Amino acid sequence: MTVLKVKPVNKNLSVFNDFDRIFDEFFHTDSPAPAVRSAAVVANSRPAVNVIETSEGFRLELAAPGLDKLDFQISVDKNVLNIEVNKEFKKEEGEIYKRRDFGFHSFKRAFRLPETIDTNGIAGAYTNGILSVTLPKKEEAKEKPARTIEIA
Image 1: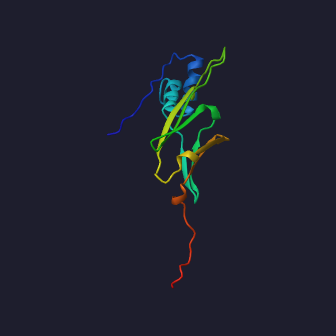
Image 2: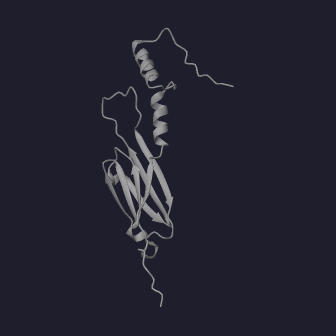
Image 3: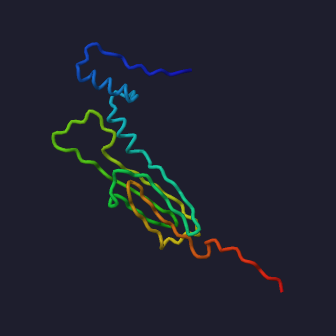
């Protein structure tokens, strides 16, 4: 069974409503209140994360453009790394939004760390919209170079 969404066309639409309808159809929104729908989607979204392993440890790269390094709260508790952001974008006086895809950005990501991570050496940096968190390995967990064992 296929469910079809039908948006009835009101012949008494004003010019502004026609503009909004055309704008919404262009961006394929099927909600009568795209600003509300979009804000809810953004508020509940989680940024994409890359996890890279090196011989020295791991690096998390979290895509979070439009933020400042002070917007992030990073903590470690019981081998769980928590990354959290709560940011509200202010509306300027006299501005009227015809469409608003962001206004409040909030997310929390949690990563269970393996026992091999040195939690005291964790560091973070935010550059060009990417939060990079380095997770160094403990010395005993680092790869040892190959060696030859001589037989006596």
